Every structure is written in C-alpha cells, then in structure tokens.
Length: 368
Image (cartoon, rainbow, N blue to C red; front, side, top):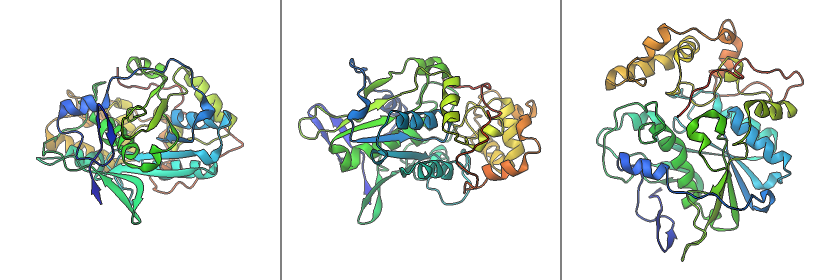
C-alpha cells in the first residue's frame, strides 16, 4: 500500500493526506530543521505510555537505552527502533552501512526482552544518490495494513540528485541523515494510529561533546511530529536526548556497568558507529574500510567517479585511503572482521570480560 506523508497545518493535522517530503533541497532543509522550543519544565521520565529508542547500534544510542532501563521504565513500554539506511534488509551488502548492524541492534533488544522494529526508505541511500528525474522513494514503516507494512510517500515531484551527501552541518547538503533517518521516524509517527493515543517519548543519543552543531540541540522538546494542540487530530510526542550533556567516559561507564559487548566496529578501531562509509570519515577510516570491506569501498569509489563529485569535494576516497593508515585493531583481526561483514550477529551480547574497545576516545568527526 502506498500512502503519502501527513502534512501539518495551522488548525491541526490529519494522517495520510496528500503530501511528500524532499521535493527540492530547500524543502528538505526546512523539514529537517523546523523551529522548536525546548520544554521549560524538566522531564517526568515515568509519565509516558510508550518509549521509542532510536537505535543506530552505536555507543550513544546504546547508552540511551541503558539509561532508560536504569531509570526504571517498564520494559513493556519500550521499543527499540532501527533505521536501515541502505534500504530493506535483504541479506545483500548495502552501499554505506555495516552489514551486521541491523542484527546487532535486534540481538541487543532481544537480550533485554524489548520489542524491536525497523523502518527504511526503499533503495536506501544508494537509490536516493542515483535519483535522476524521479521522486524520492517511499518509506516503509512498521505499521501493518492487511498484514503488510505500510509504504509512505514516494509521490513527490521528480527531481535529480546524482551526488553523494557532502560534509556539512546543513542537512540539505548532508542529506543522508534527513532522507535515511529523520524522515523515517517522522513518517512512522505521522501515519501509525498508535501515536494518537497516550503520550510518546522518542529518545535519541546526540551529545553536545560531539560537535558544535549538536551542542545547540535542546535536551527536551516537543518532537517534530508532535501535534498536541491540533484542532482535529491530537498527538502528544516529546523528544528527549538524555545523554546530551554526558561525556564519552560516562557513555562507556554505563555500557561497562551492563557488561554489554559493543558493536564490532568499535573493537576494530572505529571511534563512531554511524555508517561504515560515513561521509565524515577521515583518511585512516577510509584506509581501514578499504582493508576490511574492499567491495563496499570500490562501490563508493565507482559512484564518485560516475557522479563526478567526490564526498570530500577535493579528494576522492581513493586519495584519502592512499594516505591513511589502517587501524591497528583491524590488522590481523580476521575473525572479528568476518563478524562485522556478516548479516547475522554471532557473538554474545553480554560479557564478563569487558574491556574498553580500541575505538574508544578516538578521533571522531561530525557536523560543525
């Protein structure tokens, strides 16, 4: 079933009305950065009927989940939700992300006895990258109609992308976050009727320490798709960034308390667990990607050549990798590389021999 995204209006919001996002670059930027005002009152953590934890598989989203559990939130109210940035998980390797990430997130949720769900934009980042006089693809959300997942959007005006996301804090330029993550949550909240009942809290793991851009985020605010004052349809959804003021040391401390074995990427020396082929990757990360995932690296390099615009703007990924050094933790660590390149996570979730991963406190880049 193909359904369009909902559109907000001054007198309320109705789900499933004729609208689509990302019709052009300006619309994308406005959609990803709407005006928002922080709540004046502190959060009452226990006051919500459902909690949606946006789980990337990285340390910060893991820390958010663990903090929620330490706060005493009942497990039957928590849902772990993962955005598949490369599109529907089919068992085939994607263009940008770690193959193991989706199943790692699933196994973490299962280990805590929590619900787990997925969303994706059809074709993922690669389809959007290759979009040529076509609308942006629809989003698949975990709301079933006649036993089938609902598709949202995909009916916007044709447009052309034919370029990689670029290194920028501007989400119309670094469009991967908007297209493959932010808008997916928006589509789900706007079109699943469960969110019209009770109070919903969306939890994400941005930290001020990561970048000057994230330092300006509100810790607690109405979600972008909150509509609590709508005249016809009301939907109360708040957005909480519980670890916004945390240091990286605090993040690792809570993970250690729970004895949780982190994503294999950290153990291979990566300091951030966004996409493996993140647009913010430096020369050493690209050298390591080329070493542990040569086919994926070649796909990115080939598409840079096809589009004629490199991610870095002045250097290709081949240029960067040629002057970088493979992370020491990845050299001769073939068994862990095999785990990272598998679509099934085969290691334990908890360990009694917890050690700080090699990628901890490394150089991490992000939007500024």
